[in-house]
Image 1: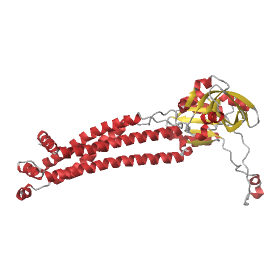
Image 2: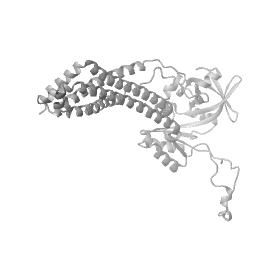
Image 3: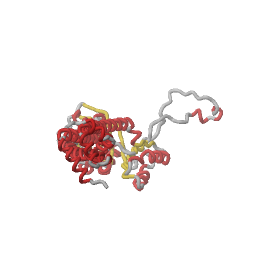
Image 4: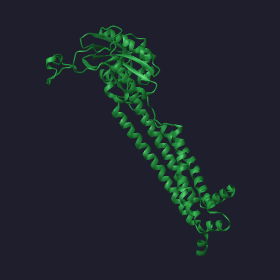
Length: 420
């Protein structure tokens, strides 16, 4: 039966007598794990921030009527030309309504589905912003502001004013920050908007909206849904877009296909709308984990080299241990114990180092106009990364100690003693 007390005492003695080598091996694990924790926490936090910047403003499913050419041209209606080759040039888009047919029943249907977290109606209108001698083209979006705030974190992007101010002001507008800068307007001022038909309406600026995406901030603003319907001279059932948020984002492609067939509308899911961004995000994550794992592997090789040298230095000790009755298995356990002690001590210190560095990074000021709500560098303090770090430290030290200890197990003490 293995006497663990004796084995651990011998392992401790070996480690303490070679304190420099022990410290070097432990620091290798410490800095490897610390670098892994710091990098993966920072890079994941950064990726999450960038993902949120896009995904928070993108519905999981977007319903609208697509402008497209007529599928069936008049010539296809004549039976005598049915088997003929139709050569038609300069096909123009068909005239169709922008509003979604039966939008209100669709909204009621979506809100009752278990998979749906929420669905919000929108009315989009192409307008001109007028201020003094300037007129800028853009988009005015009518929304249910409180529901949009609940589903898309819109409050995080309102740098001045509040959603409640827009809700309580019938002729209010949340002006894009780029527009506000170009038109030299601020909260409390009035801006005139002109529809494509030439009608002019004055609106009071109750807030400034900054999404961090320049193209949006330079052209888009928000009003209450009823306000935009009145500006366009449309009824309350006039809705051009429906944005849907789901409880599980992975359900969006299947539900989008179902809604498209069921209601004869165009349904774009979030994966389709952000395919390029998702590819970039996946590549960033891949690079992060690849570099982090490399750091851990390098630390494992350092442990292997140090333990390998330690065995060569302890040849005489191994011979004496075997000569006094220790089996090869006992000798292997001694060196494996040393490796695991180094892994545990180095791993715990590495977790502490990684946490301290992450806290320091999390407190570093980070200010940019593109991200008004972010004041410090983003760091993800997920417990999972620390669990992965300590597990990998133990696995790498186990593997790094296994090969040298296996060599020590098969050392012939007679040859060593004869050679002394």
